[in-house]
Length: 233
Image (cartoon, rainbow, N blue to C red; front, side, top):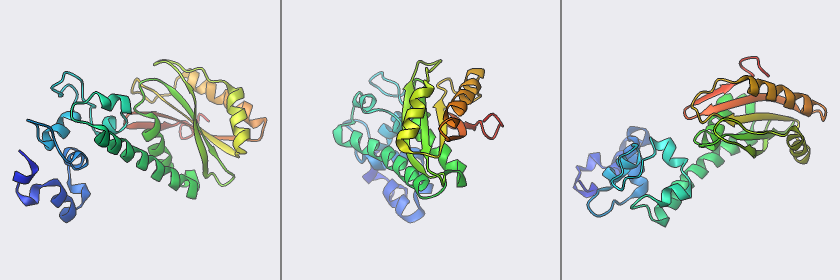
């Protein structure tokens, strides 16, 4: 059913303005971004299909929820019927705005004054990747974010991380501390023995240039684990 044919109080835009964004479902919020559907498919139906695996009529999978969609690449979105350049750009812009908002928070105050913000930031950057990515958050003396860099990429099972490169980037940023991070595409955030060994290797290497390793965070879609909280850093 077209949005204009819905009762006014159930239309996503009116609902948002009268009851707040939290009252809308993921489908309704996405429909607001998409604005229009395509021939034979209303915007609410289109939004719902995008959020559910296997629901697209062109045979391509959906994205298994709003997080999967907003972490999709421009290339992923290009294959979706009805998503023209403008709609693809808007979806990508939403995720980038969220990343930048969290980055601003981490730059303005000590990162570990809000551990949840660090995990949320890493979720947006790493959790949806199909391959392992090893990243480093470089922090100043007050533990505020200076920069985040994706240092190494690997396969689904392992990443080759070179301590020398991490040390060089730490010196480049003149940081006082770092947070290490990587994702587990398998969906589990339990650290492996290799994760523990890598953490200790990097901790020793960075200590030589007076840089502290504050944490090593492992993320997967919807999950995160702090190795520091487990006493492993």
